[in-house]
View 1: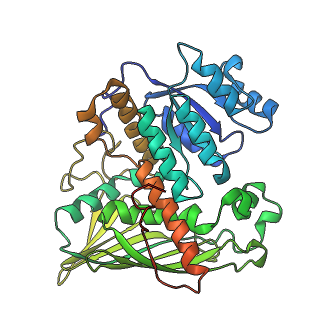
View 2: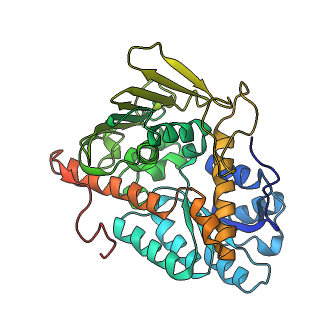
Length: 400
């Protein structure tokens, strides 16, 4: 069970940029951060509309003197306070991630950022270098990676329960944007606008989630990929609302990834199936408490969250919050990640390298690879769906 006694001496003083009134993602961050008393929200710059952001902030209980009009003002003023913020979450459009992350690190803050981390791999490496220089951490909000059964899947692969991995099929293919809803939906409009969203839409928005689960569970390295993408709603071009990606991994395994917002009738369809030489596992985020385990020649097994036959998490910050049979879900997954972020930030500030090294969380490296996926898919798709090397010399080691 989740160890609620594993608290900090003092909660991490925390601020937020973006994610204001009416933001589903903003609420998700706040719900997760405040769930276990590991963070306390003391400052905000919620909205481009300063008055609306201030009103919302005060309604949430933030001191009116720490409800700021801009993130620049928040970072500058909080740095002057003895009780200033120690960490910040960034829940803004993609185009702003790099500049806000950079400013936060320069202000001496730990960062939790929405994905994709940046527009380019080069920018992402700049943030990694700056974080190292400032001795601060960057967490990237891959919210589905906090589900306990994802960690069970990862451990099964690590322990060889599946044998050598041969095939990985991943997808995140919903149908909610099968028409041009952005005409009347500002929250969607920016996602299909290149200046705000970047070089991709569904690859960066949801494909990176599926890809991160693939990376996390299998720990395979991509060697090359081939991508084709479509804008079925023509006004979204050049940004895609559907993409198919083929992957070749080092060591011989292969994979596919389907990202779509036009899978009419579908809710999420975020699934990952990992096929090994002896057995396969499959997880579906609409049924997150179950993991399907199929051994060749035997009846399929459904592994259930919270049961004693599962591998146990020795980190104590991302395990079951309630007993098996009860449904844990999205908010629990996010809270598990925020618990990891909190313990990692605390260990970093204390210089406790032993503790820090054993806490897994989606780090800046996860952000780099999500950005790389977007960059390489665009390169492939815009050159006739040709195969491209996943890592280029220079970009690979962060020297460019």
